Image 1 (spheres, helix red, strand yellow):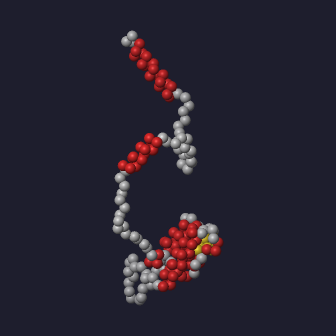
Image 2 (tube, rainbow, N blue to C red):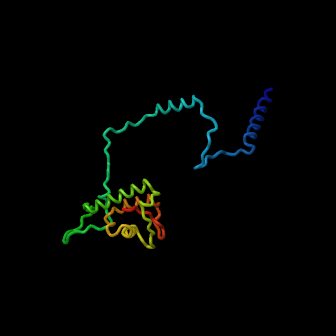
Image 3 (cartoon, rainbow, N blue to C red):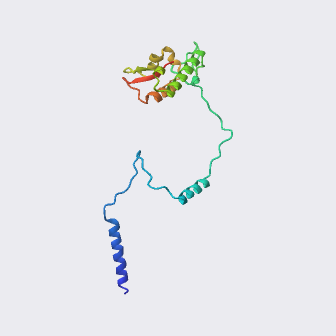
Length: 180
């Protein structure tokens, strides 16, 4: 009887290994972007367990005196070099002081972009201009808005136009620019 017991254990282990490793078993993998339907709702004990775990999670208290940061689009660096009176050396990192013209143009551009982003299908809010070969952002903006376009902050204008038209800027592309 003593010899039969180890032999039986060995046979049962061998058969369980063979049955568990044999057969066509497909592994389930989630695919990105594909939606899956829920076959059954989780039971109330599982949901209660999730609720108790969420209740035990420490929450970060909101700051009471959090500072509000706002940046005026008028004071961004512009495309045009700063003109200095004769005899003075240029100061590194100096920002040109906004003039009423510059403030008006920047505010009008910002308002036009906001309107266009709110209603992108409204044809009355934009013009379509084709990018010419060898053209960069500053020359494109000069062609679109005239010589005063150098007063607009290039980084802000570029990012806003890319949010309207997409990130690419290449020759032959039709760009939508807001009407001022």
